[in-house]
Length: 302
Image 1 (cartoon, helix red, strand yellow):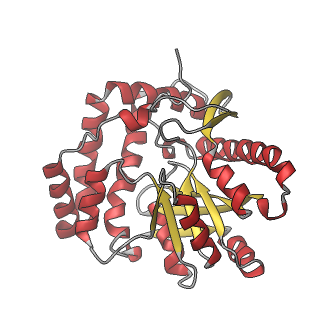
Image 2 (spheres, one colour):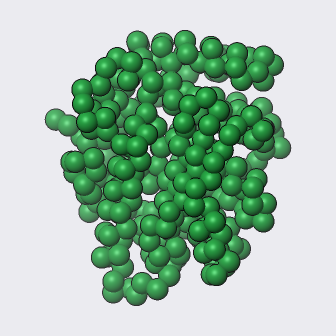
């Protein structure tokens, strides 16, 4: 279990030009989602053609997920899926759930857990599909507030523009990397909220642990699991898969329950939960390979 230098995903500078993003937002809201998606295809093509490092890293991941050598069209589908989920955030932040066909798989399990032990639960996801579509669960179950823990500085220009789209669509965000992050998460959980976070990337100098992932060792952050163990909460794996067009599929699966784990067994329980997380993430990557939006050297190839 180690900490490390600043990871590549944090060093990467935001590529999007502010003016181009504003134009895309205007097109999407004024001319509609279908026209916006036409423009999006050219945006994705630009990214594929002029981002060689991201293209190379994406190909390394796709080879593992697809079980074959990826073709050029695979790389394009990967980028276009990513662009589609970012584009759809515009509408989800405006509560335009009517534009989407969203299927819920396993959300009743989360509800039962909350009803039986009203101390909240953690939803641990990844950069897999859309995390923003989790807002649909709060929309469906209005009595279940959802807070999100995230690294708020990454892609700050995009977030600023999306905030400008609908100032009233405030998200309950707990900022990761701050000393009071766990206390704020505990307060949300004590109030019966769901607290979601992504556990497939680490912040600078975060402690990590090695798990087997898609057939090779990879390092995952320890922070989410330490928090779950210390707060003694159930942890659900959450994935908002993008299925193409306007279709999403929200998956919820119980991954671990730290509510009864004694302190002496925490380390073993955390290691088991982390590997279970890596296994589930790997399963979903194989099931929907264009949904894991990793364009960095995740396996630290030499």
